[in-house]
Length: 427
Image 1: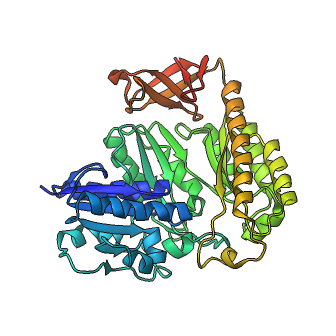
Image 2: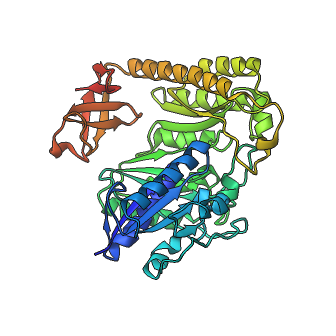
Image 3: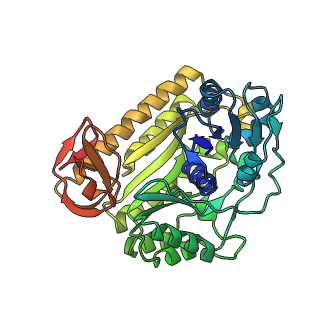
């Protein structure tokens, strides 16, 4: 039997798609192995959000080549879509697929014959209208369910519209059918993922609110998390529904990107910081225990020290539980990459470190605020230092001694002791 290994970089959407692709190979008799093991086929699902992600892609290609020089090495995904010519130059690559054709990976691999140079099958994605469903199924407790792809926003720093195409999605009935398949597999928690999931339903004349209302009725799924949703698209109606629903959890990830209106305008974001603050405050009003995380980019062109301090003060004033801090990275072909006023790399890293410290303080405070409360915990299967961990509805990590009987079960627990080493409450 042939063996195949996947290495996935980037977002939850990439992980969902890799898992879905891997499942199709397993159904055809392939054995999936770890990427660090010798395999007949290596698939690297790439990201192009940062230069770091692109460097990791190159390292993964070299590792695959070292593990088995005779293996077929396929590089797929976002970096392939926007930087295929550069990938062609990397020794050891056999097949290059963009985001449009990676669903054909199985048939291409099955019929592949090695050549002296990489076979580049990347095509223009700008007119793509098809939506390819996918979901992860490898984790025993949680699954990532793709509900949307692409983006119409064209923020000045972002390469995603060029790598994934325009916004598109399936219809409510199809997504609900996928959720039922996950329920049949025994998954208790589903994370809704996509590029801009609040934009769901344009083609089917439906809405994201329609989708979550329908998903709430799927028997067997006990929890849904919304991976990331734009502040201008998370309406009060969506928030109200989540606060009253059977399955949608008090956990939100909302991209802020900058706490400075000047910088938001330069980024061509579709809101000002006041709207973001309103959304956060409304969530906390109807769900006081909600975990709210925000993406923030530091060191964007023309972000002065004064702009950063203003943004930092704004962020500190918000009842956020965590930040996902990104150091601005020039993406070739984006408007921001040719803007004047570049911030020195050292200054970008200093600003990033400052916001990371703020994030740690906010998370510590959020954990302290929940001390003494009784919560529901879904236990996961990974073992770490003889312990197992799970998460509460509002995304607090909880640990206990490893016991297989708890895997994929939900128990009621009281939060009392915080272990700083594992950054979790310990029972």
